[in-house]
Length: 97
Image: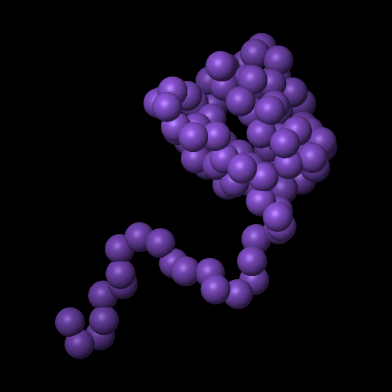
């Protein structure tokens, strides 16, 4: 399966239009259309992150890095949770340390 097919399939699985995905990501709708049609195949890391985050999947899934990666399931609530969010990455240095 290609990036174009994965992108379209995941968007449709979530019930999003290209326009709705564009609003969520800040990626122009025309660009999303180009990705889905296969007209444009290269994208920046920032664009890939935005699309993956909005679609609730990994960049690896969209790119097809590993074919045995399980397809994401449709979340019950597609809006990000306002509570319980955790910061990812390295812990910040403390003033004492």
